[in-house]
Length: 221
Ligand SMILES: C[S@@+](CC[C@H](N)C(=O)[O-])C[C@H]1O[C@@H](n2cnc3c(N)ncnc32)[C@H](O)[C@@H]1O
Image (tube, rainbow, N blue to C red; front, side, top):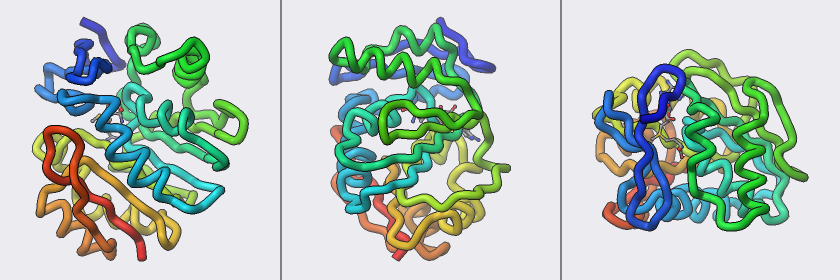
């Protein structure tokens, strides 16, 4: 049993061999048990990062958790210049991060360790052209002072954290996005799609990662 700042978490292996964390208190995993790495690539890297044509990209992640999405964004950075703002209310401990098996090579492991060892609440260079702000903050009471091109909306499920999926939250995010900005999420619930539409997003249903029929991509047209 590992502990993040206020919660106990357990290390689990998902179906593609990559780790995830389980939160007993919420009865919820950080990722899909059908494959954490696969889900991150399918929901965030392919339909958001790679879909985005811009070369200079501001990314907002909700929330950083294990750092898998931030890590895979850095691995798949390509020619982009990235500012990555990751919100996290309950940072995982360095001890938990050190056990995660996302890196495939020694240089990836160095990148992943650096991601976790960089200080919180400071803007730092993770690697050339990739600036990271790990922000120990709560989405429900943060005021944004940047405009984002991509939003990785990776909160716990609406059944577990309904306050994260409310109209006022999506309005706040919509207002903090550039036009043509893209938000993706693993969640495809009708009520979530309609809430996104109500604040102004154009929302598409895309095929979901393994084990899920659909996911959502919302665009600020
Ligand atoms: C489904 S997990 C995904 C984590 C992460 N994207 C990953 O790949 O490991 C949801 C994350 O949101 C964080 N979180 C929960 N409530 C939050 C809040 N109010 N503000 C910011 N982050 C929050 C959780 O601690 C957790 O790390």
